[in-house]
Image (tube, rainbow, N blue to C red):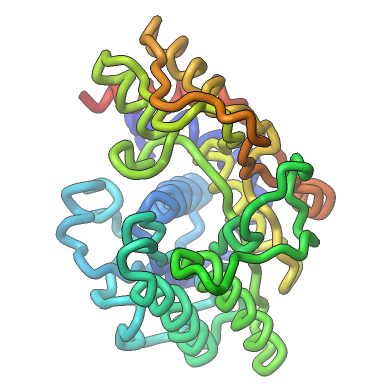
Length: 346
């Protein structure tokens, strides 16, 4: 693997924290849905890096509706000999031939706009797509299945809870249509539990929170992505609200470490929160980006309303205690790495 890869530092970081895991994939075939999105790109980058560095002789088949578009986005991945594509939609794709040892189900619609405007499509994509992929996992003889779930399964985080633990019993309001994403992920987790009980499939659950890093879209609803886009344009960094909500951001390289570790070493049907515990108000996150790009102004569209701040920050005790995981890359370093990637790409 050439070190000309702009992600070489991040990929070496991933391999340093996962090297002992990869032998399980030696000579195996894995199947990945959602392999062309943000999560998927990092899974494929790290898979190829480990595959070539450790001579694993493993193969990945990636479900995609449009492989040609992905080839334009990431030609070095799309053309790699260890990666092939299976054309289809997660709702009804035809089962590929042959056996697969591991299945990673990372396909989902995370669009806030879709969740608001067409919640039925959101719900169907998550629930039916998960069941279809679980059925395929049984048919192809897979041993392990990873679901990328979401912290949205907890519903609104109470202001008195600084970090959400896995045992928190909250849930989205089922009478609000925009709860389709969170409720869909809850049903997807339930399906994992059912398929484990009925078929013995080792189902692993990663409840993912917020992230930053290369491949993160900079033009949709991710606040830190919007901040970075503003900074790269040289314009003022705009906070659309009052800057008080708390968020925490795990770097994408750490995300890859966590996902591979949960798939290969995580306990079956044990949900693991995936994210950083370093919660900060969005106004402080914007200042971190401002400092990284060099003195961009920070502007807030709203004013504090004297209400308890909204929070979306996980507690990650099971990942730490069971798997030895943590946020290895801090927020400031994560923002710097992301900016450097985009500047190199210009």
